[in-house]
Image (cartoon, rainbow, N blue to C red):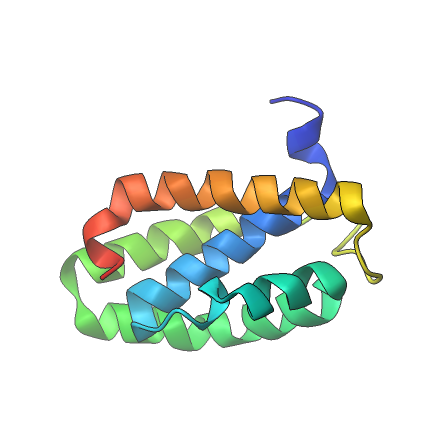
Length: 123
């Protein structure tokens, strides 16, 4: 892994992508994909990501209730979440321009991984 992939902002972007994947796979919504949600997560990562982490349980339950590939995907995504939580915790303040770019990179790269693996479930 590169140094960038260990940066808190990059990890937070990956975390947001994981939470979005859970939401999409389980609840069949895409609220976390909206530009406003991404903006809020970069503006206040600790508050926003913690809020969405709390909601992740509901998305997992919905995915498991749907069964089959949805349940399997939700379990896999959920199990990967700890790797996306920065060692010193989620940043409490707004991300600066450089950190926002890292957040975006982490989000887009991780989302691409999920779409490649679980693309049919993102409908």
